[in-house]
Length: 373
Image (tube, rainbow, N blue to C red; front, side):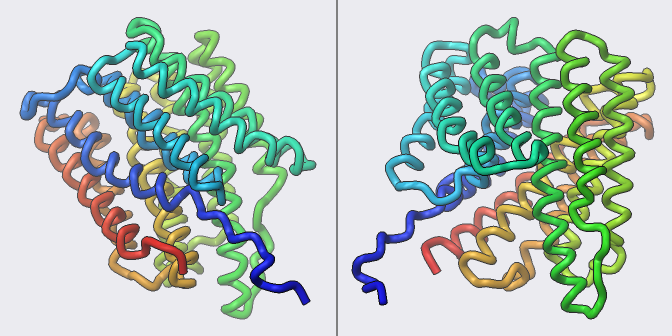
C-alpha cells in the first residue's frame, strides 16, 4: 500500500482565483462602463467608448472565466503568474488603452494560457470535435492581443465580432459537454433514459457552421456569415429541444444551464438576423450572446463548479440560482427597447443593475465556498 505521506499534494484549481476575479470584474467594471457611457460617472479612458465596454466584456471578463475553467489544477505560481498577466492587461487597457502596458500583460497571458491548455486538447483528444477547443483558445488569445495594438485596429467590428463568435463556439461546445451528462445523470436518477446526449452529429455540424461563419466575417462576407450563424442558432435550438428541457426544470442547477443554452440559440439567431436584415441594430442583437448566453452560462458554470467541489451538491446554496433570472432581465432590457420604440436610457440602467447584482451574488457565493473541501 502506498504511504499517503509519499503522495504528491493535489494542486489547487486555477478557478479558485480566476472565478472570483471574473465575478468581481463583471459586477463592478462592466456596469461602470455603462454608467460612464450614459454620462453618469467619470470613467478611465479604456471604458470611455462602446468598444472599450465590449473589449472588457470579451477579453477581461470572459477570458478570465475561460482561463479559470480550462486551466484546471495548476501549481499556485503558474496560476498567480497568469493572473498577474491578465491583471496587468486590464490595468493597461483601462488607463492607457492600446499602450505598451496592456500589451505587456495581454501577450504573456495569452501565450501562457495556450501553453497550459492547448496540449491537453491536441495531445490527449482523439476526435476532431474535442480538439476544436485548442484553435478556439488560440484564436481568443490572439484576438485579445490584437485588440491592444492600436485603437483603430481595435475598433474594427470584424475583430470584436470574430472574438464574440469564437466565444459563442466555446459556449456551444463546452456548454453542451457540461449539460448533456448532467441531464443524463438526472434522468437516470428519475428512472428514465435520455437518448439524446452529446449528439455528436449536431455538435460537429454546429462547430463547422460557426467556424465557416467566423471565416466569412473576417473577410467581410457579412451575408454569408449571417446565414451560417442563423443556421447554427437553429441547430443549437434543436439540440436543446432534444434534451427535453421541460423534464429537468425541477432541478434549479439544470434549469439555469438550460436557460443559458436557450439564450445561446436565441443570441445566434439575433446575431444572424442583424447581419442579414436591417431589422435590429447589430450592437443590440449581440447582447443576446454577451449578456444572455455568456452571462448566464458563465454564472451557472462558475457556481456549479465551486458548489460541487466544495459542498458536493450543485443545489446546496439555492439563493444563487435566481441570479440567472437577473441576467435574463438584463439581456431583455438591452434588446426590447428597439422593437418597443422605448427610450433606452432607463432600460440601460436596469440592465446594468441586474447584471451587477447577479455577479455580486456570485462573488458572495465564491467567497462562501472558498478554500479546499
